[in-house]
Length: 245
Image (tube, helix red, strand yellow):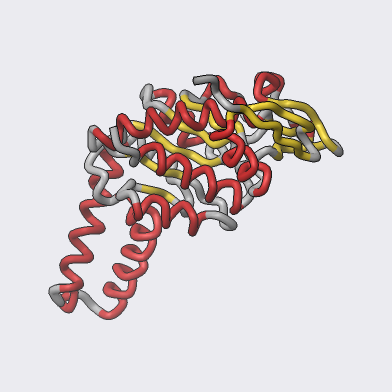
């Protein structure tokens, strides 16, 4: 049976002929602003293969490339989910961190939505000890065992626990180094990307046009600032990863 195609027309991309089943996806990408990159003056030349053109000084992604790479990243994510391997989700952008946390919790992924502490991956042995200290203090407090300390000491311990909870609570049960990192905006989160590269941990990156794609194992060229864009892309990744075999 011959594959049916339709023409999709957008202000930015003009007229495109594509399979019927992809038209809805492309329309949604346009609607949620996935296609918009950074100002062209900030473009990393290595991202040119994923950029269709420029409109009013802003890079416009080639959505056919974005769709292809989104599917590839989703299929890789699926292999990890099927194998019950941990995927560490990182994004501390204030405007979208609630979306990241909801996505991570829904899929039981360890996550960071506050400040990423340098050395979390490369110095995991030390970080894991601090996590155990946090858990121990928390348990002692729940059992009322901190009453043996003075009021001032308890106040200091409470502050210590609060700080550690902010840094570690999202991944306190990760148990070891993750099988992959999923990061939104590898430029802003260059520290975790650098550490993952050092440890040869694959990186899935939702990245705008200022990114160096060489640092990302599974690139998703897309708008990494917009709540609508990121929410849509995470939902698509989840859909692919949770699909039946």
